[in-house]
Image (cartoon, rainbow, N blue to C red):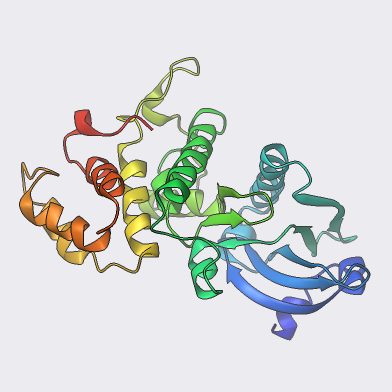
Length: 274
């Protein structure tokens, strides 16, 4: 790991951990692996970086999201966040926390593939967990454009708990700012629906489509031709070319082919009830 990143690690954590290895970067953090000096266990450490654009411009909000992500993960999987490692330096220049080993799906596949991306049970579990996080973000944090983090780079898998979850929440706000062309932080409820209204598949159409493409991506399928097909007006998910593409990608699972086909359907009424 580069020295300037290591300099962001708070003093006690730097003393307690060694063998720091870079995993990935988010809109506000560095995600690294490190080995606990006492237990010799490998953990993942999230390190907030005040030099990153969003953190620099919206420090308080970036820290809030940093903590909210950890609280959400601990709520979903008790014991997954190593609370005793959470550390803020005196001047708040260094903020970090360790968790059980959890890295993005894109990294999971590079590391001997700890999940089987063609297994229907695995995919169903991923869909269930990610949709649960999407509902939480839209109803509780009242954000939109959640589809921007529904990809293998921002979907994490916590191996020890068998849990998938969405990370890099700050990216949603960062992308919203870029689209708006200003530096204001917006927090708009999905379709301005009431807190009590149950979210339907139609409300999450973009997120469901993004999830379908994430499944194709982790299976290393080249889907640019499929995107072109789906852009044709009035194209159906039952179109022969669409079905042929899915048949080649998932020859052993009619269930997966059917599910992904429905997730990609341009007709919102054909979306699966996730």
